Image (cartoon, rainbow, N blue to C red; front, side):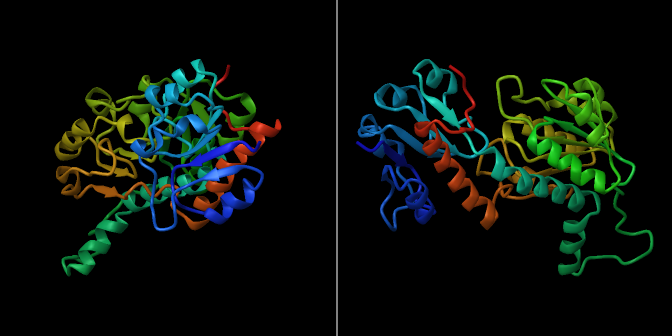
Length: 320
């Protein structure tokens, strides 16, 4: 009997049909965007695997109902939509898609940094509104070369951001749960720092850590006050890493110079106060939104399931 796979979102049907050709797959019908939680809960007990979108909750109630479930493969590098602790207790593997998201997310981090520091979006807006004042000392931005980039979370994406920043002549400092080995530190010219030291000395702070109980509001009012007044904050990780109310006040009061955000504390809803601030560059969580990355993520998530049942390599985030 073929293992049964439930796919919660209706994208890349051709990829799933090819990669999961030896599996019995169920996904939303043509023209239907997604299965809702209410669609899935009554039928989940008949599936061996779930390929879930990043916004689909895999919680205790669903896991208790999923008697046959062996693996959840999340279409994302983050997995805060899944109760990983309870899944582990239930013997359910949780996997993610780290490889396809690395480079495009690092591109967005670097793009936000360049746009913010060199005032690209600001000048574009003023030109279009015919409000730009030309002049040799007008529209001054901040050079990247020689500045310290402090990376919080020196994993795959953090390292990819460091590679790009090195090409711009920046100096790399980092804080990580575990210090890198000497070879990696030499490769990236990266200096390990305690978190408070990194925040206080960096010209740009880039958040590239997962959302956990330890990283929730890792940037709060106290840490924003520790930053240089001419420093910039970049967040392409998860919105709740930043206390957004505290950030808004810091941007209003000149506590820091600016912020580039791909993610927001309230998810898809961006507060009006943030939208009104001129010292921000805001994009709607497009870190992985390239044609290539989206397709690669679908293939990677499906391959996790194939390899799990066939004894191959799985990007598993929990251990039994």
